[in-house]
Image (tube, rainbow, N blue to C red; front, top):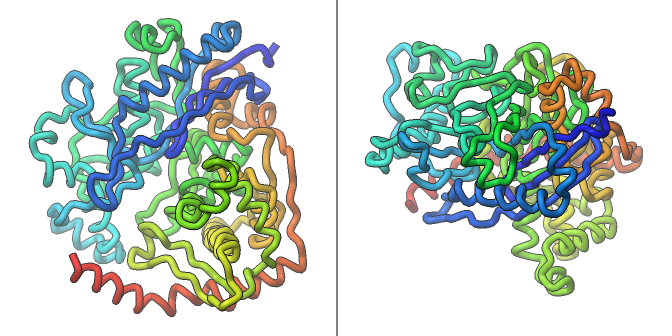
Length: 517
C-alpha cells in the first residue's frame, strides 16, 4: 500500500531546519523543527554560518527520529534534501570547509568588477545589462574571496552550494540537482547545465569547471549514505539519497503549481511569486527563469528580497509588549500581532509601504518607504502596512509574469511563514483579487521534495501523477469585493507611482551613503 511507503525530507531553510517524513499519499507522519540562529555578522551586512553546524543539526534531528519513532525510521526508503538558495561553501581537497558558509542574505561585494572580455562588455551594453552584470560580478562570492582571502582561494578545491555540501556529507560525492542550482554561478538555465567557456555568464561569474560539482536531474539517485554518514546520523549505510531542488522550487511543486494556470506565493524570509512553465522566457533580458523540480520545465519568479523577514524585524523593534506577555515566545508574539490586523481597516487609513528593504535586482537604488503617516497611526497600522506592502509588490510581480507568459494565473497557492495566518491569507486574496488557497500541510517544501523522491523510487511515473495523488487543497480564500476596490485604488493611484517618483531621491541617498563610507 502506498500510504505505507515513506521518505525522509530535510528542509534546510534560512531560519529553521526541519526533519520530515511523508508517506506516498502526501501525509506528514513526522516533524521535528530546529531554529537556525547561529549566524555571524563580522561586519555590517555580512551573514555567515558554520556549514558543519547545519550538518550537526541534521545528524541530531535524524537520531531523534530514530529514537522517537523507531518503526517509522526503519521504514524510510530514501532521503532527500531541499535547501536555501545561493549560500556558498568552499572546501579543500579533503572536503573540509575552508571558511564559514556565506549566506544568500550576505550583502558583501568585491571592491572592483573583475575584468571581462571586450566582446562581453560590448554585448552587455547593447542589451542594457552592463550595470546589473557588474553588480553580479561583484556579488559573486568567488570574486570576493579571491580579492579578500587569497590564501583561502588558493586552497579551494570545490565551490559549492550549501545543499551540495550537505549532499556531499551524506554521499561522499560532489553532486546536486539541476533544480537546486540557483544563484551566482555560470549555469545555463535554459539547458540545465554549466555554461561553456565562451558563454557570457562565464564572463560575469569567472570560475573554472574544476571547481564545480556534477549536475543530476531532480528525482534521480544522487548516491547512497556512506559509512561515515551512517555512523553520524544512524541512517542505514547504502540508503538511497535522491535529488530534489531548492526550497522555493520544492515549495512551488508542493502546493501543486505544475503549470502556468497556477501561481505559488511564498510568504517566507524572501517573499516570492513563482509559476511553472514549459516555455523558457526571461522576465528581463539575461535574467532567466529558475530550473523547476519538474525536469525540463522552468520556474519564472519575482522576488521581494527581504519579504517576511520584515515581520521578524518588526517583532524585534516594536513588539516588546507582545513578547513580554508571552514570556518571549516569538511565535506567540507574532500570533498576537496577526490577531490585531483586523482592528485596522484595509488600506491602513492611508498608510502605504513599499517593501524594498533589501537588494532589489531591478531597482538596486531603491529603499523602503512608508508614505502617509498621520497622528492617528500606531504600530499596528505599520504592521498591517508591511503585510499590505508585500502584497502590493507580489501583485506587481503577478502582473509582470502574466504579461510575459500570456497566461492568467486563475488561482494562487500560499505557503511560507505568513500563510499560517488566515488574516494574512485573506489580505493577500483581496489585494491580488483572485482565489488563493492552502494545501493540507504547511510543510510544502518538504512535500515537494518528497514528491520528487517518490518519483525517483518508482512509486509514481512522473511529477504530475505524484502531485495529483499527494497534494490536496485544504482551505480557500475568496476576495472580498469591497476590500478589492480599496486596494485597487491604493495600488494603481499610489503604490505603482511611488518608485518612479522617488527614484531620484533614492539615487541621492545612495550617493550620500557612498560619500559617508
